[in-house]
Length: 516
Image (cartoon, rainbow, N blue to C red; front, side, top):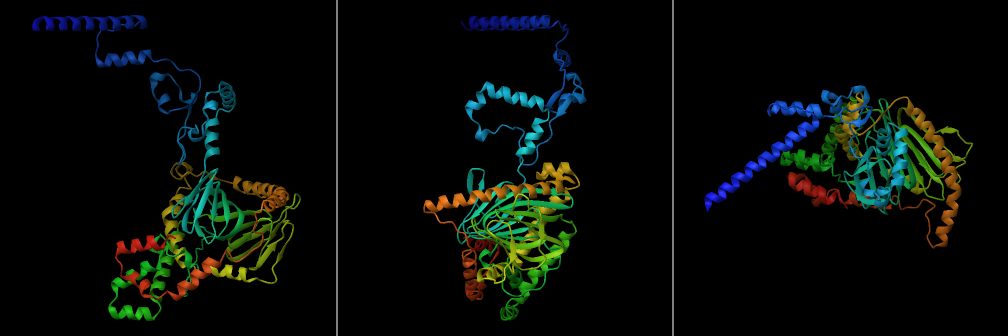
């Protein structure tokens, strides 16, 4: 019985092999190929013979298409697909917002296909249009911060990315510091909304387009000069400690505590920690000298509000705006070669007015005039106090400049590396034309928007909603209270324990006190 089974199995194998050979021979006859042997080299020759000849231009094809001789495609007929910028994928299909009906619509496909045929470089244009460059990162958020990216909203915290088009919002008693990729620091006060519209890099300049919807914004570009020795307490204490732990004063206290004797530690407490502050500033100046060698491009900004715009270059300034009310601004300090000017509203008012004096100015509701504030209110005076001494934030800026910005600066000479590694497009002389266009465009658009603002505010009031039109104490109250409270508790036993912590304990302390 077993012999019969094995015999039947052998016959079936023989008939199967004969069928396969017959099929192979019939395929070979159909292709008009003569196969003498069945070696590996011969099968490779067969594969090359049956490959089709591709004619005509091949758009967005892989590079190896024309590098293989057997494909019969010349290099000049191939439009090679470029490597996507950092953060982009090869696919341009918006899967997250794709509508199934549109996807299956033959009419829509015909329209899209005709437009693509008219623009052979449509894929490259679409990528450039959808590319949202990286503007900066959240350095600190004390309170609740949110970012609107299109219609999507999400909470953000330390290290969260800010991209072009993002609208950054803070709630009441919330303070945020944003590190921009050129090294500029931006402080966003409570109940504020700011949109980071554009960041454009050239070899000599970084241009920002920012819109202040409401609230307070402090613009603070990087200073390459030596930081002066300042032993007084920091004023923006609500933002401390930072989650960049090497920047905090507690980090230097721990380093000093580890190398001092008991007597020296007691002397240090009596001297109000002068040595620790000196070490912190010394470290900052060392980093400044090191980072200055990279020659970071100059920061230039156009901050747009509904009733006026500020154009700044190498100048720090405060800017207030509340919808339906006046705007206030002040140039705080400036570097050599600085510029600060104001652009008012009106379809024919294209004049740019320079601001030379470090004083408070106000812009009227309609954006037609501006004037120096003769009687400074307490709210404006306290605003300057909030950011008067911020050495920990300055040190954190230098640490992040070395970590995040210097690699971008080193890639400015090689645009391909800048695009692929960092996701930025390099600008040339056209950057100045871009600025001129945006200045003119925003002036006209905001002039039109001002006429619609009154109608919108009236509708809100009819619905029982009250819009904040004047400056109050909300932008400084929480920060001032925290600053005064910190002065009282500066030398308590709880605070002094930081210098005795090990690395793990200090890290946990940073996580607990660096967030709120």
